[in-house]
Image (cartoon, rainbow, N blue to C red; front, side, top):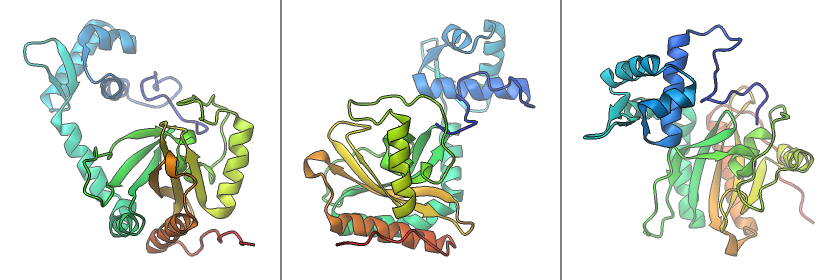
Length: 265
């Protein structure tokens, strides 16, 4: 989606000043992220590597806990060290630290689940999930990736970046895949700071999100609420709550300005 983005599982060493062995190791980790469990031959075929080369890299990753092999099986999966690194990453994110309290307040005020996300390549990665405060059972969402163009969180960030010419994949029948239509939406988001998504990523689920800016005025992420499509469009009070939360988090990150709300007739 973003200009200059690279498919993590692709051969990112081409045309770049990278260390080939490290690049291959990272590609193996991304391949296991996408497929969950793979045999050595599947990994070698996926990355276009000789089996002996793939085995040496996997053995090294296994020694460091980044990859583990199934008991009694030949398939490999991501190891516990990946989780440790992920937790350290989350702990160092200033956006997440600043958003925790306000995400909780937004969930309490609206009665809805709240997501905070950052852009990674073509996707939005959920770095914080505040469940609905109704006590119902809900799946944790931290680490989930959603195509940015099909997500209100993603649109809230993309609106402040240069557009790209990459094809837009369809997640549902409602996903916006027309670049011109998406560009129109993003212009509106850029002026208001608020993005919408109805059934575009998951049928039955819709979202409202607000852009979060840092002290340099860069869009570093977004915060939003998730509501059933049966309750769409979102009430104006919910939109106002998202706007206030995004503005407050931005202010805590040092942002001096935030898009003004639209004038109501």
